[in-house]
Length: 422
Image 1 (cartoon, rainbow, N blue to C red):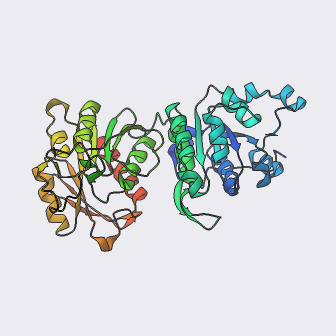
Image 2 (image 1 turned 135 degrees about the horizontal axis):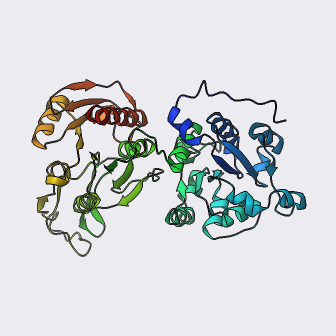
Image 3 (image 1 turned 60 degrees about the horizontal axis):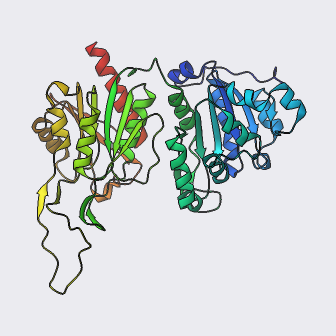
């Protein structure tokens, strides 16, 4: 069978992925779920990039894809039964779990995530996962309610705390007819995340340290109320992911969001602007700082210790005080100032003019200006339209792109910037 399927690198766009994945050994565990059909394309894409893919098919996974199909695409034997005397003699589950550079569970159902989090070994897949000493990545795929369930979120948190990389899920339509987070990531995004997990020592930003801020900040009024804004964190998280994929050591400092942690980054979660500034300062020195977070300009001067009650006397008088300016602080950090400080200017009018003024007043190298008027759908949406202003007031007008595409274009420009300075 293995002589009939041949692959060529001619149609593979990302040469860096080829560089990372060439000759890598991937153990792919396919669990149950309609998204299992994507695992077939994942095998093909990984092999296009030079990786060898060995597969374990769970009982649930075999309800959606057949062992014959998986074997034909991988050109390898498919393993299913821990009690198979033949399989154990040829390739015991300990060898299976350790003769790989990375173990990937795709799709990762709620069931297998729960078993992994609780250390269960009820079949070949979970036994191999428990026995492995290699990096593990999971690609969750399930109904949105299952994904949002407290048990699943607790299991994911447990796995992340143990160093398991989580790729997705993403938001979208599901086979069950519902919409929300729980949809399996696109295959190309999974491949990129796998490459990032394995590391890209030859990436254009390899050896450089980057700080990214993302999301909103929450400024407490009392224990149950806060001042915030509409930022989803999608753009900041996308930039952090792109930096990591380019080889940068990336620290993502994020306010509260509903987004999964990007693969390959060091995640620092904060609430307030003061927390975010402290985390940024603790992450210095760095060569790159990108402030994407929509930080609240003001906070309540003295937050109440208890919930504020209506007493018939009208609304309370809230005394506001100004929050620290994180972007300005990083741009004037003395000998710890990053070599490249980039800010975002979310504007609703006079976009370029306000961005130019911000670039000058805050001593940044670049400002990425975007129109966040309600009609644009930028806040919470998947697209963005950027105008880049640098310290010399040069403006680049980028076409409307997805936030992932904006991230890739920005990171490519950062790579070119450092190449020119070398």
